[in-house]
Length: 394
Image 1: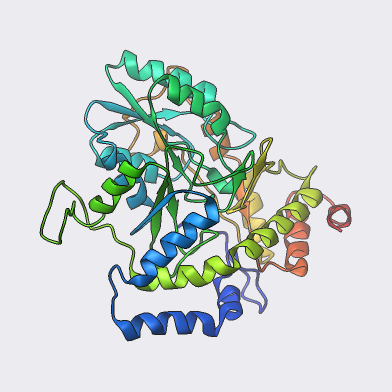
Image 2 (image 1 turned 45 degrees about the horizontal axis):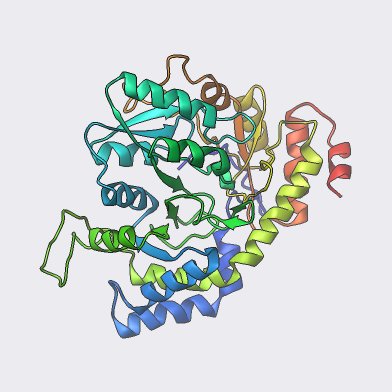
């Protein structure tokens, strides 16, 4: 988890993510859902798993949903299902969490890093074209691209998809942070050849442990994924038709997600109201995030750009406002990944963003008073008067 600035200990301190407020809202519904699993005892692949998959498919419009153990497992399984491996190049944005690059290495392929756009934090289509040439020059076969929908808004699939198609790349959307978002009238889960989702507890739709899913309209791919998540199983439990892994979602987590999905549209709307209020108040104080044309973000994070970021975060912490840095080091600077290829011109945008990003509290239960405290504290931390910022928020 990202490190946060120190929190004040006074009662009423603002929470970066407030799972307890959601727990209070769902109350007995969650208790009943989990008790039902404890009563029937089908803890692995119980009936709630299939029910959840059907509900998720109906929610986002994907034909198939294959749940699994985590968002990283979802990425890993999708690459395995496509047979991607040694000698293949998979294009990954340099500014993101390590999971997409990790999954590429786990299947034996080579991650090739791509720079991102400063306005959206997401993979730059122009950078993708350059990275494809870099891979070919290095003797690698371009095989897949994994755009990451960072902080809750979709990458620009309208520009990425034609490049992927022209180069016969498997387009695997990493929607760990963006399930519930959309682009040009289409829901996340339908924007790539397959989509990997995470249900980590702090995600907009999260369970009470690890969980994930792969979404696709491809019938054959879905069948391979269902086999892979159970050790490459064929017709029965002891019929192994391919090398797989133990990638199942626990039934208890499926039961939790069914209840949370029921209130998810309302929570998305609440997140968007907070983001809109932040944008109105903070414009002019910091560089605020804006969805690209036609995109609807789910606002997994609200990440601004500021100078002297660490000092600003420390001042906010003293004021009782938690913050996080997503991400302090781009992937090509991480010790585990620094030897993998990147385009000759480097990855300057990813490096600039890593020094300036600061994520503020955002969740569906952040009330107006807490929002005002965040706005005021950021104004003070930046040395700006906060009264005008609060007036803009109203």
